[in-house]
Length: 201
Image (cartoon, rainbow, N blue to C red; front, top):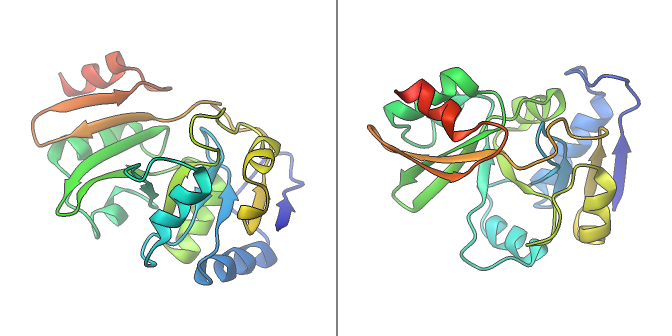
């Protein structure tokens, strides 16, 4: 288990080459990182490696049917992998990057799309590609606003912890399922249902 602590007073996208190369090596090896977002600390792995989502579910001690979202650089990046309905683009234009998870239908079922608004994870995705996005806690346990919460719960199951201080919002993202002409609020977070409705109306 490794930990990298950012000593900057304000995180920016000028991450150290050592950090970015270490993150890339960990992800390529099929191991997991814990990384900061604007909402909570998340578990990152390569979503395209076989068995990765099952591995994360095991680490979180979550039900086998739990969905694991994926973090992208932006919606254009996500659209290279999944079809995004018109309402998804509308919400993305208003709220992304930011604390919103847009859930879309795929041939394999639903998938959550995140575009985190945090300089470090933007750098990681830009350097490596899409990574998984799910809170770095045991299922049903408190969400990790600080890195220590994640470390206490997950311990040595994680290869690399990236510590960038407290997360801005301190709660999970708003989760919205979208189709071309309708939406369903799955979880209300920093972005309220009223805010969503105002954009779609």
